[in-house]
Image 1: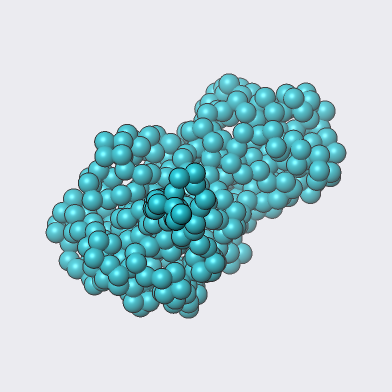
Image 2 (image 1 turned 45 degrees about the vertical axis):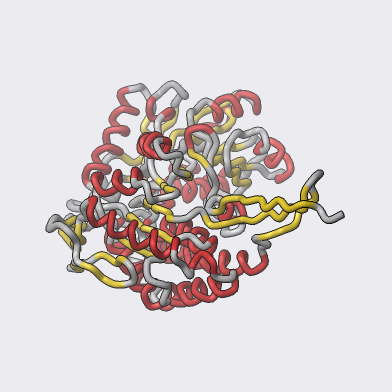
Length: 482
């Protein structure tokens, strides 16, 4: 039982204004394993005030890039030293297999911090520009106070994809973790405290809806960085519009994996098992949920995917052998199970899996589930399920595959699978999505921008583009010398 009683505000641990708490329930045992304070709008106000002072009075935003980079490297070292503890926390509160927590949550997140420490040391924040009438200096300045709102499915990865570029840019931050998975964020605060960031640069408040909306609407917050559902992202965007607050939104997805007729089906089935069914327990916005295969190859591919799905090890997320753990909450598991029922009612064929896992009497488990005989008008194909459920959809030719892939409100990611990488790349260029994976599983690289088209969001995370999301541009125009 891990109990947190204070928030990290203005460089120290401070008691909350209220008495309400957030219970953290193990998805595996269904028992309460932790507790964190449920912040009030007053707690958000205190954190924002600390971040505002730290930005307006400095020294953080005016430090030279090498000085900020030194703080970030101390932070990254602290993350490395406590990486096992971070991974264990992610697994316990989120239900993710420990191997996934280590390799897909913590290690990439630490790499984000290292990357931005290096990037700001080689990035010019001021440059001269020739202009018709002026001697011009173009400057890139930190936006200001950032509210970072992080989802339950990537509590560390999502936090550091925002914290690293924001802090590197010279912004100050208020981190708001998901109420379902707050405990790992308290570890981030401890590590930030040990890195000795100036008071108010990094602040942490765990809270529910009321506190979250106060953060979004707060007049002293200059930018909201959010990862979560499209519905909530729209609500945040509307609230940000009232003050013309900047926002970046990494939202939902309903990715299509196009398997071409020359692809080695057995190998592709193994790759798509990870990319579609078991990566992050299926609770990933980039999961390839719609698998498009040539009509003539559909039976053989379904057999191959079914065979590899039967080998998946399901169980205790803290067991190193586990590949698929429980879903994060009872409510979410019931939602995913509901979609399995909807698929059967709509006439899709359930090839394998289902709403429960044999032999597991407790925990919010859903078996890796495969549907075939699916068409795009079915809800299981058109809506984001966010669990270990995939749909195999037959297509006639490449034009038909592109039409089906694009028949969605989302545009976050997609993939193309072929023996010919150039052919796959050419087809991938025709997809209106932010990331296209060719013959590969899902991953985030610190130097590669990530984000979506259409209703999958606004802005980009990672890469130089991710740093730019936390910078404003200023021009200094001086008379030209004669």
